[in-house]
Length: 368
Image (cartoon, rainbow, N blue to C red; front, side):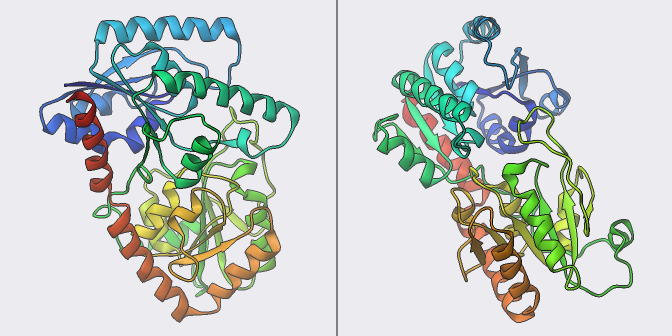
């Protein structure tokens, strides 16, 4: 069996799909990463995955440029002739459904900012995305959703048929790699928190408005005497919500290759996002046994169970976010109880091996 994984970013495939690719290779299948040229081609090749590049502009809505992308992708897939094209995120989902020669799988990893913003442009783009999905879903064998809210949205609006839809919650997390551990001592020095025995609060996300960065900064300012506040992530210049905040009491650490060490350093992990697919940062923190505070929005509430492994707060409300963070910072016993439950949920529900088996089951169902 030949399976082509299609995305608009090589990083997307490398970070979130590699375990599935490796398992397919182990079982004797041929696997392709079809994506724009990036920094991860050699890493794919080292694992035995064949890399094929195609041109795509993430933010472009120019019809002529998109037609060129479609033409190029159609030629590539015709030459590869895969049994299955498994696409991820909006543009690859739509283009893969139009270009794939045989079985087509669309994966809705999250609906994105156009489904949050109520401005005229966002509403127009939202209608366009829904229309394209409604059209291309007819050509797809399966549409996989990573959270139940998005699947319900597509079903209620008759964008997909019930027999097509499958729920595979998240991209999974390697709970052996992400497990409770001690943080290296030098991180205290790097973060500038030597000699101050206060809890550490961590947020990991791109620096864009929809992640709730402003609310995190305001909440940290309110609680500045109770904890150290860290932020891992860099700006996304191609995103309309990118901005350059005044960090105040929050220590920005930029992009970090190995977030495990920083999660290990933290006592509380926070994500006040406006909408998610299923946020990997919360999965990583849960697997490492951390208490969580997140917003009560699609994606986040798949991972965070109120009073189970964390607290959920309304999106866009810095005051309530600060209250929830302050509650857990002040109660060590409760924080530890939530942290233990986080680890259990990650292992029992989100281990990457479960996701691999779910995908493989769908592939075998289609090919047979």
